[in-house]
Image (spheres, rainbow, N blue to C red):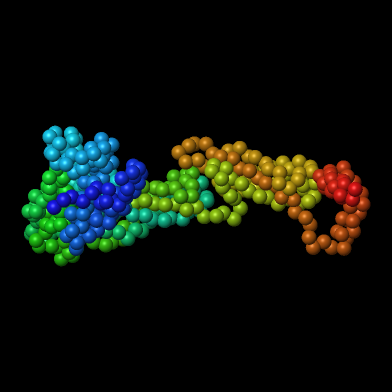
Length: 373
């Protein structure tokens, strides 16, 4: 039976570029991958044909030979046999293209590795500043205490899988292609259990809540990830455990806002303090106080920088800075006497007392006059 044209197999034109070939291969390989078509015996054959086609066409020399001589270029019909270095298992090609395909492909002892887990932990800004020890409770799969993780009932042991001889993989040879897949008998474990443990039903693990202590260092930021190696799910049948990842979120603070290692704080000043000057005390993240000298005539929005009074910086001994932004508060709920005093004060003021507003309205006046002209 004649082989189907490689370009037709991939669904591309003979002038297809490398990127078009790669895209078509990914699509077809996903469609026919045996792990995704366990009930379709023809899928494996189609998968092999797709890989064979791509392996030829992705190589410039092989593609040129195929374009000139067709399939005969790789069947010994040209007198020189197939091109040197051409023989390769298409499972390797697929691994390069798609990686682990969601964990369905297994190799060696990692096939029974437990899953990684994620735990979201919320902390206050003060805790991010000082660091803390946190206790977390994680529901997860742990090693079965009845069978010690073997999955076999008491008095029995797992036996070596006869199908794969303990490798967890099976191979099939067709021409110069080698197909390697996870052993369907043992699921890649390399062993089978004839008498499973009644508690874990042969998996070697049970569900349980673990209490863990987590060290949160000073200076952590929103989204910081802490990895606890080996604290994820236990692996099936004594497989290696996964890891636990703690993702931190820092709660909003009622006074401070953070930007990296710096802290910002908005402090409202009375009109008289801003005008006459004086001193004001502001809080710091460490629980202390810092005194700031407010010069006379301070305007709203002016920032005062306090060096080294900001946030702890992760894995460093120094700290960021604290920026205090002044806000000038306009008096409200004035009494009659206060209003009279304010009116008297207004009568006594001139352009020198409010240069910014005077300058602004002078510009506006000039603009209006220009528009009249």
